[in-house]
Amino acid sequence: MDLSLERPEGYLYVRRVGAQGITLIDRELTASFLLAPDKAIENWPVTDANMLDASHVQELLVLKPELVVLGTGARQSFPAAEFMAGFLRKNIGIEVMDNAAAARTYNLLADEGRRVIAAFILPPG
Image 1 (cartoon, rainbow, N blue to C red):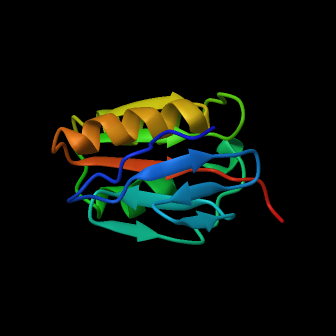
Image 2 (tube, rainbow, N blue to C red):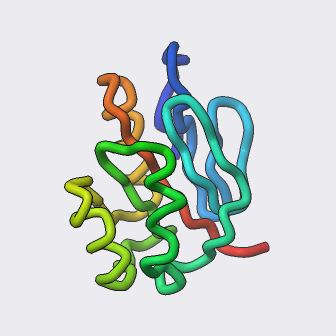
């Protein structure tokens, strides 16, 4: 699904979401990754929302989000409560959705100048 026909300025954006990959500007990523308006961290070693626990919270907090959008693949899948609680304890919102919805939400918030972090989970291989 193509999300953008225009090329926004000033932040990294998702152009397209597919079943096996996500196109970030003009480059397709096929492994899970973290995305902030000013940087992408590739090869995030998470391939399923069930893998997420409290130990994963800190690597996202380093990016200083005001909101975290978690894309869990083709379908919405909630991670462990301890992962979600790690953000809530820091007064940082977290939303869980499928990758297409997460990409749309991330693009909208980044375009507004918000400090949003998106974590996209893609299937292995």
